[in-house]
Image 1: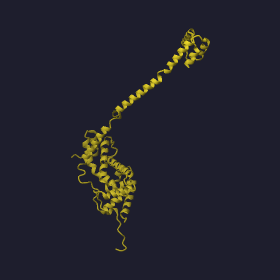
Image 2 (image 1 turned 135 degrees about the vertical axis):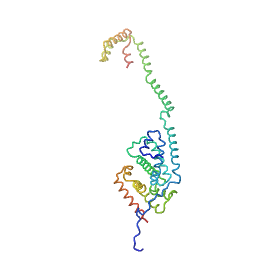
Image 3 (image 1 turned 90 degrees about the vertical axis):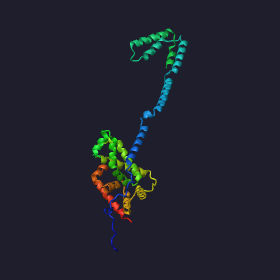
Image 4 (image 1 turned 90 degrees about the horizontal axis):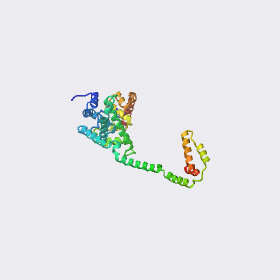
Length: 149
Length: 182
């Protein structure tokens, strides 16, 4: 009819129905399919869900062996005193070659200056005995000091 | 068959070593409602099937830790809603046709879906729903199609009933405008 406003659609005019239907028989086997999937996921999880220290056991053993080897090698390089051997050799040579030159007063002064505050009378007696020994053996104490430093 | 209450089902699942039986009863009780809820949000049946299974697998894995602060139905619905929203957001990120909005994609999904059985006006209504923003679509679907109480929706969506009513009202207005477009 001319001049008549077109009918405006309102929500309540539309019949309420659900056109989004599940396929026929979908729910009949749904629970079974769901359990299948749960079983699959749990089996997968058991496979991949082992604690990492179990799955990586062999790699960890290898890494530990390599680490141990590295530490061992470092220990050998760092702590076995190759240089001290050579110093001892120099020291022995110095002792042998300089027996006649020594200065007992210089040596005593040196030990007094370097005495630590914790030095006990026993330490001092021991030091004196060492000095006396070295003096009696004609050792060049200046060279020994050089070698030790 | 004995009709268990929600609390009894949870207890059965947790305490009496009848996990599978309790779970099956839960699945049978809620699967169709959950299916409708999810399908109304994603439209496509295969996606719905995936999301529904994911939801129920989460229920299976987590029901032991369910603290019963809400009722079982609310808890499961919340999981389904979160799974659905996550799916929609992931689809948005990995969409095949990035020039289309998610709503347009959903609308096309609806037109192409072989399991859509409505007439022209139903199709148009679904397209109008698909054009709504995600949260409004959720509120509209739960209220209009699932006829859920605002109080239940509030518990599921953690939103006040006032905000839900306002959201529904806006959704209805948008849908009616869409329906009256040429």
